[in-house]
Image (tube, rainbow, N blue to C red; front, top):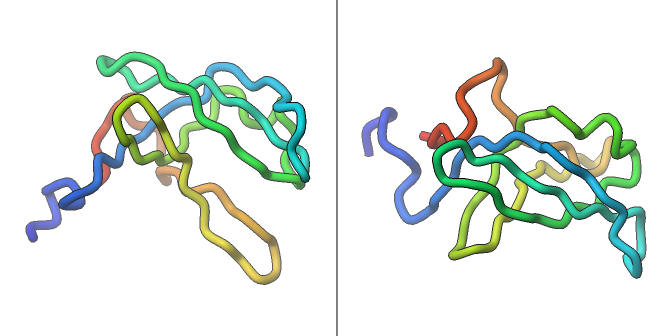
Length: 99
């Protein structure tokens, strides 16, 4: 696979968090995110990040994987920090494919 090709088999792209609401009923603080995928529209995703306030998420870019109408926000599981969101090092266009 060439480094410039998207990861084969995964529809991974960069999205911007445009809205965050509390998700009732979660074991830990959980949120419902509205993600802007640029030309691909908007999708909703759920996220449980107990150490991140929802105000910190609005406007942040994240990496997500799409499966039909569902979006899954990706995070690394750190032993010391818990889940840490995957995101681009710099600002890119919303909807940019991850390669």
